[in-house]
Amino acid sequence: MKRSKKVIMLFSMSFLPNQGRYIRVYNQAKSLLKRFSEVKIIAWDREGNQPPFAIVDGIKVERLHIKAGIEKGPLGNGLKVLLFNLIAFGKLILNRQEIEVIHAFNLDTMLPAIAAAKLLKKPAILDLCEPDYYAFWGEKYGFFLKLVNWLEKVISRRFDAVLVHNQYQINKFKKYGVKRLRLIGSYPTYLVKQVKKHQNIEGKPVVIGRIGTIYANNGIEELVEAFGLLLKKHKNIKLMLAGRVYENYKETFRQLIRPLGDKAEVIGAFPASQMPQLYQKIDISVMLNRRTAWFKNITPTKFFDTLANGVPVVTSDIGGLKYIIEEYQCGYVVDETNPHEICAVLEKLVKNPSLRQKMAENGLKAAWERFNWNLMEKYLLEVYEDVRKEKLAR
Picture 1 (cartoon, rainbow, N blue to C red):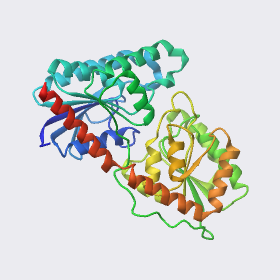
Picture 2 (cartoon, rainbow, N blue to C red; picture 1 turned 90 degrees about the horizontal axis):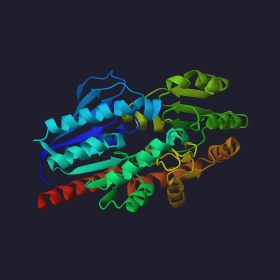
Picture 3 (tube, rainbow, N blue to C red; picture 1 turned 180 degrees about the vertical axis):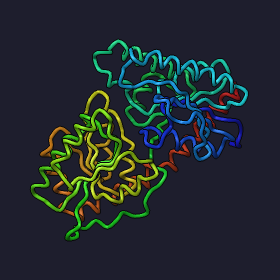
């Protein structure tokens, strides 16, 4: 595939390094720059405080300043989503002469992307990171959830290709009748060459780490309780928590970790580029998420970051992670609601450096074999080649 016109991506976030889905969009955009003369992202800046135009490592970014908050639900944000859709559609029409492919990330960008693609007779790709969009709305907004699910089912079939994140989504969209479907995992672009030496050195604490956004009822409370229980048995341990703390949870979080004193280190928001340095500091990675309607089918990107950095992982049974851990023996799956079970597993790893070493090596092996961006880039470019050829043949 020779370099040709531009790809325009629609993204319903600001495209900032500390946003969870940023790395998926960034990796794909960087890969596409190898084959296209320009990749441009039309992003939604919901806080309205980022530069309207930017170039990030060669990726052009145009941000639409439309203030909104996801936590307000469909009634509070419905008109804002509509406004974003209308402006994004207008931007696509204005760029119609140069567009080669339209790439829509997430459901908030689905309608303007498919409308412009059909009008302009351009290929369109739908990229869905989350397995069940807006499941966090709950029963209160049951009607809107049904409407969203219906739109996803009907409109996804209209795209030239659908990219998803895990096997649950593959099964889901096969049932919907999507013909060109590809799993493009949000896997790391880097892999450490070898794991660090895991050994219990006298005086040096074993560091239990959690990397990711911190907010209420997503496993942080159980982790802190489990660590407190473990601390009663083993003094030479430390807890490291890295990630942005939600504003409405900051005071509760401070009270939660206060009893741990200097045994807890808190690191705030960080860019994705700092991930390897953070993982170098920890000996055990903990990823606990309650199996709610929102989380039960999610496959977190941080899980694959853990493998790529050669760190054993303790996680919840969500998004197919159990099967990966069972296949590669790279960690443990626990009941995230049971601090005593979490504590027991952590104690096993704290006491046994050779077990940590073996699991770390197994995780890195899994990353080298399957869960890396080099492999995903190949699949992504194949999808682009297929949809462009198909469009030219019509």
